[in-house]
Image (cartoon, rainbow, N blue to C red; front, top):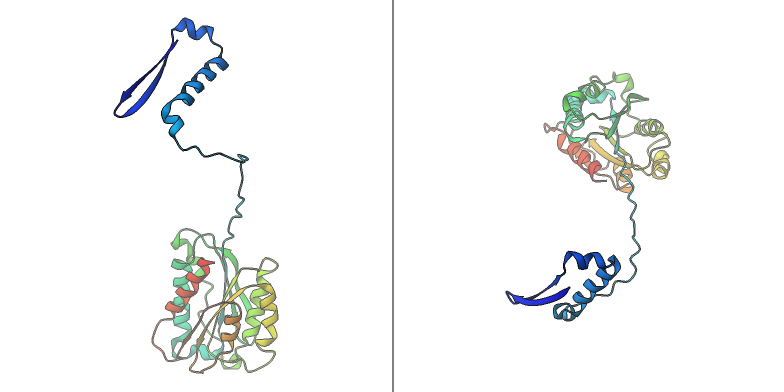
Length: 251
């Protein structure tokens, strides 16, 4: 067995030659040692930068899978929502949100409120196919209440949404839409502590000319978004609903 060294394109190449008979005579550990010795004695190896490797124990990072977002539409259906096509525009905007904005595997529920609150759609997984989401839109409000129920009690809608979410509420999003202030107690401040304890995010949309809207404060406390439209505004509400939906996907 012999070692030869020659230059090629400015690099020195070391070759280890051996006959078959010689290879049979060498044990595997001897062959390994001789090969390593040749490599270590090479000038290129000696002149190279060698970094000492310390701990080689493998390290693992465990990543928890992100839970699909949960969204509850909390919608005002008091009598005044019949005016100026407010309810029609709200239904159209919510329909577009559910069908085209919310991601697959997210969950959506619908709560309607006036002087009381009801669950129109319990929490439901959003399917991948947009056309398969049509059935979700069937539970969006088509009609508002009569004048007898023209007092929006927002706190009842929020409480009903939290009841529906149950124990697995943290990280969920409430999208609350109303066109007026609460006129009877208990009011929004009475539900604030429950909202904060639940660690949900409350987004609010007001359809009113009033300079102040009680929901603004709750949205700010939970890092939610707020929008306001005039009651006779001809604009679609979709810009607000889309912003809410995009915010949900970012969490």
